[in-house]
Each structure stands twice: as structure tokens, then as C-alpha cells.
Amino acid sequence: MPSSLAGACGLHPRRAAVAACNRCRRGFCRECIVEHQGRMLCPACIELLAAEATHSRVGIWLWIRVLLQSGFAIFAFYMVFYVLDRHLARIPPQLPLP
Ligand SMILES: [Zn+2]
Ligand SMILES: [Zn+2]
Image (cartoon, rainbow, N blue to C red):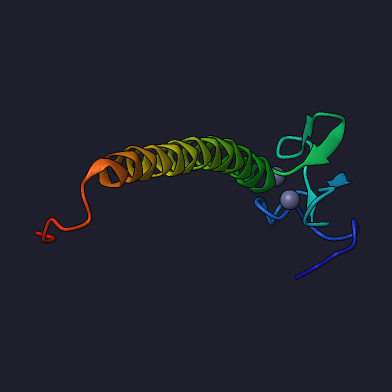
């Protein structure tokens, strides 16, 4: 894998590289390299970053949902036992358990 700008474009072997991707450090031609949020990136890295961003967003929402659901589950669990406990406390002790 060439790492210097002296080589050819990573996607077009017949074109000379004019800039290196900030992420993968490979050289690319003027047509391939794209400025993305202040960084020079190749198309593959932009796709990768976009996929990562989408993935992390989904991950955060998944975590929020899991936290909310588990929080609600714990609350519901607690309430059920709280109510059960209060009901059981009123049942005379001589009654046989079901
Ligand atoms: Zn790259
Ligand atoms: Zn190219």
C-alpha cells in the first residue's frame, strides 16, 4: 500500500495523486479527494465515516431506549412487589399458600 504522494491515485492508477486522504493516508487524484468537514478524504473514507456516524447515532438511540425500558421495567417490578407486599401483609398468616 503506497503511502507517499509520489504514487498514483488509489482509484485511478493512471492518474497522479495530488493529495493524501487524512484518514487512510493514501494518495488520490483531484477528482477523488473531497474536502469533508475541513479534512481531505477519499470517497471510501467518507462512506466509512458516514456509516460510522449513522451507526453511532443508532447506538445512542438504542442505549437511550434500553435505559428507558430497563428503568421502566425496574419501576414496574418494584411497584408490583410493593403492592404485593402490602396485600400479603393484610392476609392472615394461617391461610395456606397457593
Ligand atoms: Zn481515505
Ligand atoms: Zn482518482
